[in-house]
Length: 85
Image (cartoon, rainbow, N blue to C red; front, side, top):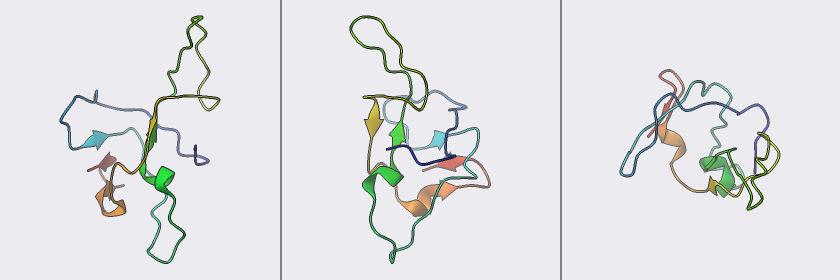
């Protein structure tokens, strides 16, 4: 599930085994506290490059099957350096 105003771009390609995600902008990423309701999608990524079997490429922020949840802890978000560990 997309969280408003969090669209950003990778600044380095992701490769298997990487432990750091380098992003253009992390300033709007939400960091929830333990008191907040647990949203697994808030610790995940959506890649807006989904193309269906007919070759139709869905526009960003519309639809994608390329999403992963629970990838990182909130403590891994480094807004100063635009990285997630």
